[in-house]
Length: 101
Image (cartoon, rainbow, N blue to C red; front, side, top):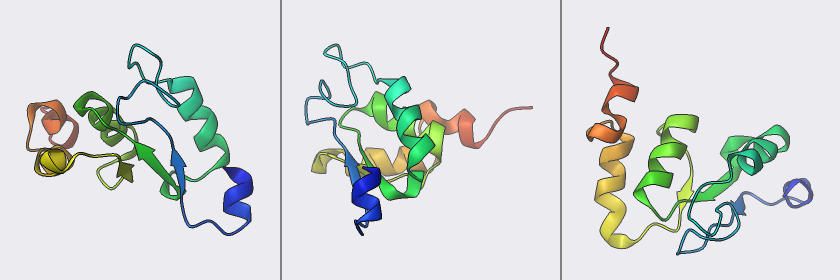
């Protein structure tokens, strides 16, 4: 990814596949957080398109990197639910954006 960015790529894709069981993800669908952390040590978050095919992975990336994180591999039927996650309008992200004191 670093070589691709240095060669002029606008974004690099952190692969996850539609199934969410490859690349960034283990066979079980669990996100490989160590790999994510290694990537962001070398590449700015804004230069990565994170494949996030499941609601759980979308929530995780939004909480970790903010509502403007670049997410890909989103099914058309999931676009509006994803936007509600980004805005903190669902229980998964509500407390992240609007913490109770």
